[in-house]
Length: 143
Image (cartoon, rainbow, N blue to C red; front, side, top):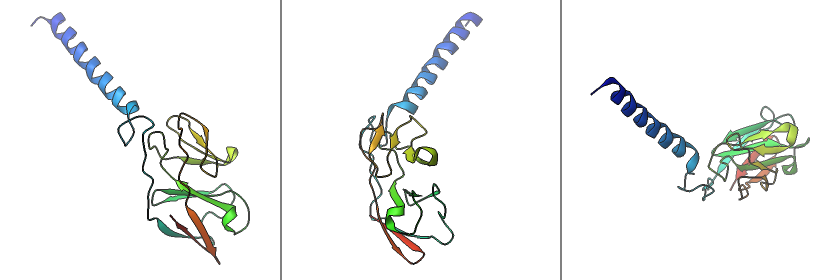
């Protein structure tokens, strides 16, 4: 094989590999289709010690596929929110953005309210919300 034929063949092969990898990276969710069903965790049950964790408004923590954020002062259930950590668009782990008081997906920019509602797409389905109960300094998240 001549050098120019080799380089041409190599270039086509690399282009095919790159295109396939790029399409796979952006093309499908865990369910196999963009925007498909992302199954949130079920039978969740864990505790958070409020004396030492998420003590300030805007702090959050993730556990068991759920992200819990403190959205207000005080130690009542209404001071917190707990939603599935996987974005409903493609399953990327969302983050709580204090400055916007919302959950944000770093992958494609979807945004969700503290109650899990979609505020900005490409996600079209709300996040699952988990139950919060507080007794003393202990918060229990279930759902």
